[in-house]
Structures are given as structure tokens and as C-alpha cells.
Length: 112
Length: 114
Image (cartoon, one colour):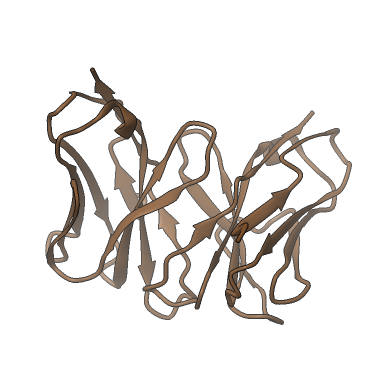
């Protein structure tokens, strides 16, 4: 079992819809959870991070963390074609020098 | 601020050749990281440097060496390149090597080993 798992997709949603991206992790010692967006041929850029159970909202983006279920998700409201990218989930563990452990990424396609 | 810069952007090597990938950051960050990205595999950590003067192995260190030249620069060396090292290499940095610090990524180096 991979330490961080994502559905590789592609996930296709119509413009204006809510896109829901999911990530599960296996190590209960995981401490912080990051969502990076990566456009084709570009480097990852941070969208959000979360480390407490519950929801965290930033504009059209909401990250949700459930440590009991070892599950973190990213919701994108009012999806736009410019949101089409690969979304990478990453986790860190305490005392590990901030090392990120990535999932394989979910490709999102927003259709006009 | 340029952020994190990497050179070269593209490189083609023959099996057995050596090369060094350069990375520099101008954000006065303490921690630096090298990742490789292969299709369908996400990013995997090769080596990291929690602070100037220290380096540690990540998930996939075999075939690589690193040097933390100073606080700004962290280089990755392939001593004898193999086709399995064909990948996109990303350097990243963060203020401190803790669980809560965002990592900023460079533009990447696309390496092909023939």
C-alpha cells in the first residue's frame, strides 16, 4: 500500500461545478497535509495546507481533514477551465525534516 | 526575488556520463530538497538538507550525491547516469525543515539518459 494515495483520474467536471479531489494516507503519524497544483510542464505550487481536523477555506478552495479516517480532500467551487491541472496531495510527519511524501496526483479537467 | 532557480532546464546524457544539477534560492531558506518526478509516480525525495552543512538521504538516493555548497545553493550530482534516471528533477526550499513549512519549487530540469 502506498503511503499517500490519490485517484489518478482524469476527473472531468463542467465549468461552474464543484470538483472534489480525494487523498488517503496510511501513516497515523502524518502531521501536515498539503495540496499542490501542477500545470503541465510546470512546477508544483502550493494551494493550501491543513493540519487540524475540519475544514479550511481560502477563496474557492476548501481543504477538509479527517484524521480518524486518514482522509484529506480538496473542494474547488465554481470550477474554471484555468483550474485544469494535476493536483498533488502531500503529507509530512513530525521530526522528519519537513520531508514531503506525495501521492501520484489527480488530473482535473474542467470543460467549458 | 527569483525564488528557486535551477540549471540547466534540459539535458540529454549518454549512459555512463556524469553531470551536476544546480539549484539556488534567494529566500534565505534553511532547508533544501531534491525530488524526481516520473509519470504516474508523483514526486519522490532523493536527498534533502535541513540546514547548511547537513544532508540526508530521502526515498530514492541510489545513484546520486549532493552538496550543500552554502545556504543558497544545493547541487545534485549523477556520477554515472543510467536510463532509469531519465526524469524531471525539482529542487525545493523551505524556511525551516519542519512539518508546517511550505516548500517552494524551482522550474525543474528535464533529464534524458540514452
